[in-house]
Length: 109
Length: 112
Image (cartoon, rainbow over all chains, first blue to last red; front, side, top):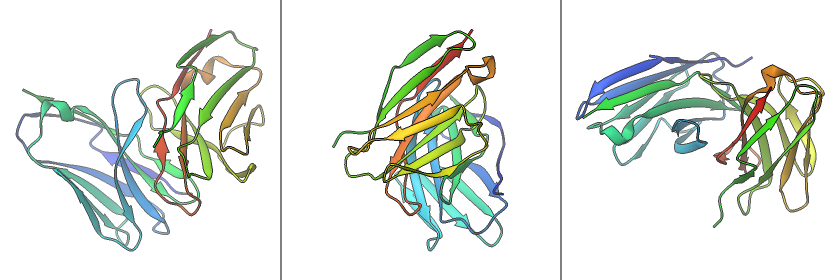
């Protein structure tokens, strides 16, 4: 059974910092790894999808990496902004998505 | 291109009642999945539908059931509601084969 863990559970940083969110999973036989953003009380917005044959994906200030052998993925956010404040969720994709508990990020002006 | 939509936005029910939540998939997608997200937790997989058949189910009792229609819209039905069913219910659509999933805005269900 796939289990996904996200560390830290919460993070507060000043504006402009570069930061790394961590995601670990137990079953390396995942198809893909997907990162989402969730604003309070809202649905999930897909940020990046890393397919199993890839090692990283980039979109703007976001970069996500995937190391299946170690069961880890990281989401790197460059030059953080207050608008980045949200909960970030990673999910391993097999037939369905298995989510971690999320990292609640607050970026202070 | 229309994204994933869900209705209603909010719903209040009492314990023991039944509820139906609705989802319209993104155009071109052939799978629809439902997730339950309790406050402060990550979403939990309920089930997925593909070609109008259930194609995988999480650890949820039979009182959680679903339908997928030929136009790829979907319903989630929950019978005999319990207080612990209070959660945000999320619908996601995608293409079969473990590809990227796209989520709707969710339905907030409160059971009193």
